[in-house]
Length: 355
Image 1 (cartoon, rainbow, N blue to C red):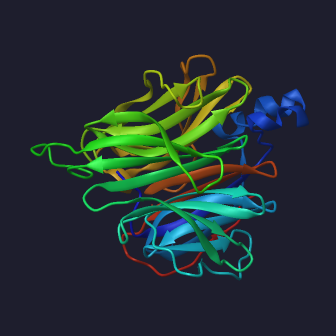
Image 2 (cartoon, rainbow, N blue to C red):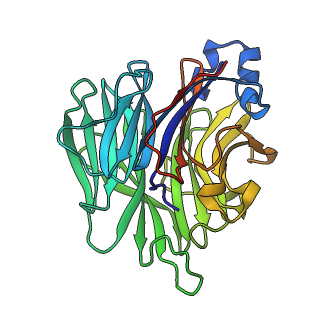
């Protein structure tokens, strides 16, 4: 299912040394080996927890000038908030940008943000000035009438920008077993100037719900990977799969199933560290059939060579009733972003600190 719900929105920061694949040379081996094992062995220390109330949709974390920011879809519009500034609130961009799904990266002193919107039925790329929150439209990749575009992703590999999005024709998020599913196709686009884009390939094309895509580049393997959720019916059991391309996205291999469809599972991110892959996701595994309302945060580890499972469905000890949106690394800390469903529509802003 797509991540667009009325919820309590919260950020949790776990302290500890975390290393991405590009930072290996900067840390000794013992720190590299224990970084993600702290999360999977539940030996981390929770440093902060802050909450905001609102009608949030898809939301992401981004590092800008060594600070973590939240870029959120709030009431169908793009909002920005600096994470560690307790006195600030979410602020709209100028002009207001309609958004239901988004992806963000830092690039040359600005933030690039690709959005997909129910309201204006478009897929657009913007540049955000993080001081003024003024926004410049760089290009409209797609404008559509009948089909829906969701779940954009955005990365930069050397001098090339890559965007993926999921195109849906027919029934959207079908939860009715008596109705046919729509057709979902994940498209990969590339550009060298952010203005002119061309289609590279179709990554996934299925008559099942394909959602929550996550693209990343592994420099050591010189390969692209695409992580995604596949479910036959909305809010039912779903699998988490991954695909690999050895030629920068021209041709994709067969999908590898990381987690079987034993629960409703929403992938947030995957990282490679010390010859292992660490998958972060939310799942109603402990109360199958409750979907978001019974979901918790989990981590699983897989071998680096062929994604053979090693430790599976280890609880992250986050709150119940959450959807894990994003996971990033910054300043040796692991940041989680999630939506927690509110059953009583409470309007209380809460900040927690744990030692």
